[in-house]
Image (cartoon, rainbow, N blue to C red; front, top):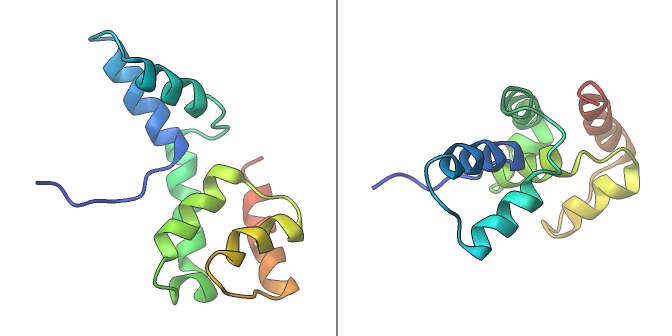
Length: 110
Protein backbone atom coordinates (compact mmCIF):
# COMPACT_ATOMS: atom_id res chain seq x y z
CA UNK A 1 0.00 0.00 0.00
CA UNK A 2 1.25 3.48 -0.82
CA UNK A 3 1.29 6.36 1.59
CA UNK A 4 -1.34 9.04 1.11
CA UNK A 5 -0.06 12.40 -0.03
CA UNK A 6 -1.44 15.65 -1.32
CA UNK A 7 -1.03 16.22 -5.05
CA UNK A 8 -1.28 19.41 -7.05
CA UNK A 9 -3.65 19.93 -9.95
CA UNK A 10 -0.65 19.79 -12.28
CA UNK A 11 0.12 16.28 -11.02
CA UNK A 12 -3.50 15.22 -11.35
CA UNK A 13 -3.60 16.52 -14.91
CA UNK A 14 -0.44 14.66 -15.86
CA UNK A 15 -1.60 11.40 -14.23
CA UNK A 16 -5.01 11.52 -15.89
CA UNK A 17 -3.62 12.40 -19.30
CA UNK A 18 -1.20 9.47 -19.11
CA UNK A 19 -3.93 7.10 -17.99
CA UNK A 20 -6.33 8.41 -20.64
CA UNK A 21 -4.02 7.22 -23.40
CA UNK A 22 -4.55 3.61 -22.30
CA UNK A 23 -8.27 3.42 -21.59
CA UNK A 24 -11.65 5.12 -21.70
CA UNK A 25 -12.53 7.29 -18.70
CA UNK A 26 -15.66 7.18 -16.58
CA UNK A 27 -17.76 10.34 -16.39
CA UNK A 28 -16.18 11.28 -13.05
CA UNK A 29 -12.66 10.84 -14.42
CA UNK A 30 -13.50 12.97 -17.45
CA UNK A 31 -14.79 15.71 -15.14
CA UNK A 32 -11.66 15.46 -12.98
CA UNK A 33 -9.45 15.85 -16.05
CA UNK A 34 -11.50 18.80 -17.27
CA UNK A 35 -11.09 20.45 -13.85
CA UNK A 36 -7.35 19.71 -13.75
CA UNK A 37 -6.83 21.44 -17.11
CA UNK A 38 -6.98 24.79 -15.29
CA UNK A 39 -3.57 24.05 -13.77
CA UNK A 40 -1.27 26.85 -14.92
CA UNK A 41 1.99 25.29 -13.77
CA UNK A 42 3.90 22.26 -14.95
CA UNK A 43 4.48 19.43 -12.51
CA UNK A 44 8.09 20.56 -12.06
CA UNK A 45 7.08 24.15 -11.36
CA UNK A 46 4.36 23.03 -8.94
CA UNK A 47 6.80 20.82 -7.02
CA UNK A 48 9.35 23.62 -6.87
CA UNK A 49 6.80 26.13 -5.59
CA UNK A 50 5.43 23.65 -3.05
CA UNK A 51 8.96 23.01 -1.74
CA UNK A 52 9.63 26.75 -1.41
CA UNK A 53 6.33 27.26 0.42
CA UNK A 54 6.91 24.44 2.90
CA UNK A 55 10.37 25.89 3.60
CA UNK A 56 8.78 29.08 4.96
CA UNK A 57 8.90 28.94 8.76
CA UNK A 58 5.31 29.97 9.36
CA UNK A 59 4.06 27.24 7.01
CA UNK A 60 6.49 24.47 7.96
CA UNK A 61 5.49 24.68 11.63
CA UNK A 62 1.85 23.91 10.77
CA UNK A 63 0.49 20.38 11.07
CA UNK A 64 -1.17 20.77 7.66
CA UNK A 65 1.82 22.38 5.94
CA UNK A 66 1.71 20.07 2.89
CA UNK A 67 -2.02 20.61 2.45
CA UNK A 68 -1.66 24.39 2.66
CA UNK A 69 1.30 24.42 0.27
CA UNK A 70 -0.64 22.38 -2.30
CA UNK A 71 -3.66 24.65 -1.93
CA UNK A 72 -1.53 27.75 -2.53
CA UNK A 73 0.17 26.06 -5.50
CA UNK A 74 -3.19 25.20 -7.07
CA UNK A 75 -4.87 28.55 -6.45
CA UNK A 76 -1.85 30.82 -7.06
CA UNK A 77 -3.16 33.73 -4.95
CA UNK A 78 -2.05 37.20 -6.02
CA UNK A 79 -3.67 39.31 -3.31
CA UNK A 80 -3.38 39.41 0.48
CA UNK A 81 -7.08 38.67 0.93
CA UNK A 82 -6.78 35.54 -1.21
CA UNK A 83 -3.94 34.28 0.98
CA UNK A 84 -5.89 35.03 4.15
CA UNK A 85 -8.84 32.98 2.87
CA UNK A 86 -6.59 29.94 2.45
CA UNK A 87 -5.36 30.24 6.03
CA UNK A 88 -8.82 30.97 7.46
CA UNK A 89 -9.75 27.29 7.39
CA UNK A 90 -6.55 26.49 9.26
CA UNK A 91 -7.67 28.92 11.94
CA UNK A 92 -4.40 30.72 11.62
CA UNK A 93 -4.00 34.43 11.08
CA UNK A 94 -1.03 35.46 9.02
CA UNK A 95 0.26 38.98 8.95
CA UNK A 96 0.72 41.17 5.90
CA UNK A 97 4.46 40.44 5.68
CA UNK A 98 3.85 36.67 5.57
CA UNK A 99 1.13 37.05 2.94
CA UNK A 100 3.48 39.17 0.85
CA UNK A 101 6.16 36.45 1.09
CA UNK A 102 3.69 33.95 -0.34
CA UNK A 103 2.57 36.32 -3.10
CA UNK A 104 6.19 37.02 -4.02
CA UNK A 105 6.87 33.29 -4.40
CA UNK A 106 3.68 32.77 -6.44
CA UNK A 107 4.54 35.69 -8.74
CA UNK A 108 7.82 34.00 -9.65
CA UNK A 109 5.75 31.32 -11.40
CA UNK A 110 3.14 33.48 -13.12
